[in-house]
Image (cartoon, rainbow over all chains, first blue to last red):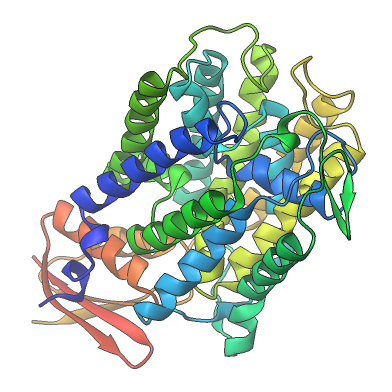
Length: 364
Length: 72
């Protein structure tokens, strides 16, 4: 039998099932306490983790999100179980770090990654339509570079310890979360920072959040779920496999939100969102292009880092650094609108991305 | 049948599929042998081949890598 058909999750039905499970879990995580229309946003939760470890000090977005730790550890478990744990790395790591930073900076101008574009749409936030258009535009620009031969070079096989770094970092963060749990009315518990108000103060119970993260990590590793890849493959190859998962996520989250009374259509006053349409669009153009040039959405980068892909791990660390810069430098948006330096961040970020894209086109 | 080899090991998405697709578009009367180093790429190249009307005649592990043989 062909190896390609052994993995039942890497089938059309498999990816639809995985997208649907993520959508349903997102709805229930929101009901259980996670922020509205955010539920399981990878960029937002990465930003919250950056706040929890104090590399930015925005008081309202500080929480060590167990879901993100679960994504990497669940993927790690799946990779071990199915003999797909393959330590690799060395494909332009510094470039990938910068791509991670810019991806996060762009995402925080829009206020969400591709996952949250879908979850905001599923919650009725019309501004996410602009974000989706920006995401598609950004990924489309990426496909132009791919057609010109863009790539970041080959990775090499690494020692098993190199592949363990991201899973170990996530296990370490989980240990910190267990040792220093939130304390009522306190912004600090041991070394961790917590929010007393805002999105960082909204979270589902630890057990549910961690279990959901582990489950999603496991299933996404098997199915290769990727929201950026869904758009890229549809544009570049007319290949719809990943798009089925993307659409399933949207439909399942929408139905779950309807069932739980969490669907509130409109543009104004949407949760953790602003209405500056041009910057919503440009933020996601920037993030979409950065994800395309790096080869995966933030979720997929977490899942690949669980498989031992140290290049994806470097991208994830870049996301955290980008979150820190976004809040320390006033680049991130808030419900009131873009940050004081959000425009400059998008313009500079796009310029750097276009440079990286052009500089790495290698016609064979 | 003559065989052309594509070595896509070490490349991240979507490079393995791009390399394989380019070869499929320019190769006539030959089998294509595509080497990749992870299962996701193996699946992606297999899907691209089938949607381009190619047949997967072999798909196997070779040491730490994977080999896909395609024909049309």
